[in-house]
Amino acid sequence: MKTVNRLKNRRVVITGATSGIGRACAELLAEAGAELYITGRRADRLDAIQRDLAERYDAHVSTFDFDIRDREQCREFVDSLDQPVDILINNAGLAAGKDPVDKAEFDDWDRMIDTNVKGLLTLTRLLSPQMKNRNIGHILNIGSIAGHEAYAGGVVYCATKHAVHAITQATKKDLHGTNIRVSEVSPGLVETEFSNVRFKGDDEAADRVYQGMQPLTAMDIAEIVLFTLNRPAHVNIMDTVVLPVQQSASTMVDRSS
Ligand code: NDP
Ligand code: 8X3
Picture 1 (cartoon, protein in one colour):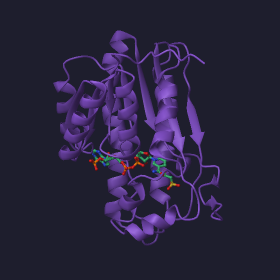
Picture 2 (tube, rainbow, N blue to C red):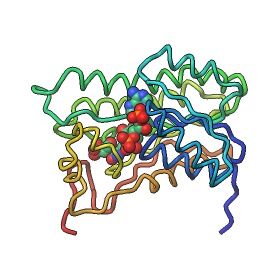
Picture 3 (tube, rainbow, N blue to C red):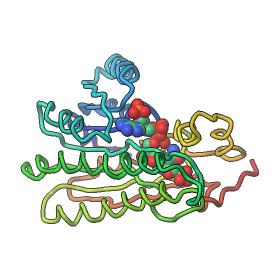
Picture 4 (tube, helix red, strand yellow):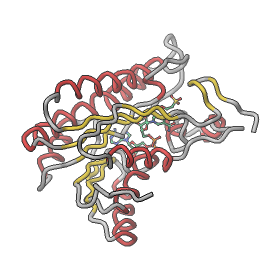
């Protein structure tokens, strides 16, 4: 089967590219010949990824370390771009804690809402006008199975991912009549740094999330992101929900292997 590469020389912003799904997307897009603008807070990681992708794929990669919760830093990032962006991958996000509603930390709620919802909205707000002016572009949001159902201990994380789902649908409608595409990819369990972050460095708790089952890899999701982005210009994939074969719902996981 012959696959056409429509991503060569496309200018792509990937938020949260220092690890996991964002890092894997950077890898595949660099291989496809896209020009990358990668973001995250850990500058050392961004630099290492830039060097690695330049060496292996001769990729043009620019790095921007800032906190997506800081609207001014987001604005400075967008203002510093010398060329219009073709694709925005809103990937940066996290879960903080898994406490029930009566015990959870307010700070955890703020971190999730400010990153997963407000950060994503800020970059969409700042980058969509130039897409609209050029009548071209693609905004791809990383949602979650947690945006399609809710589970105990995920009150605010699930709320943020339900918000991402709603934002994706409303954004598509706001941009109706343009050639801008708007998509979402909604994964189940993916083994990345996600659970280490959620359990605040308790790596044993993080490992237990994937015990006795085969989770998805970041690369599994990046391949679906690449497929979604690489469709012909008239094709808009709205959402792809992707689970490990051993997961059938957020809390329904076969751990017999
Ligand atoms: P990782 O923890 O491996 O990666 C998260 C990325 O987000 C990092 O690059 C991190 O960069 C960045 N990030 C987090 N907070 C901020 C911030 N305030 N400012 C800028 N960047 C930030 O997790 P994943 O790769 O798994 O997560 C990526 C996305 O996928 C998230 O939106 C997550 O909700 C979603 N997802 C994950 C699933 C999973 O099971 N792993 C399943 C479904 C969805 P840095 O720390 O350098 O700032
Ligand atoms: C991450 C997957 O099941 O931990 O979005 O919510 S889950």
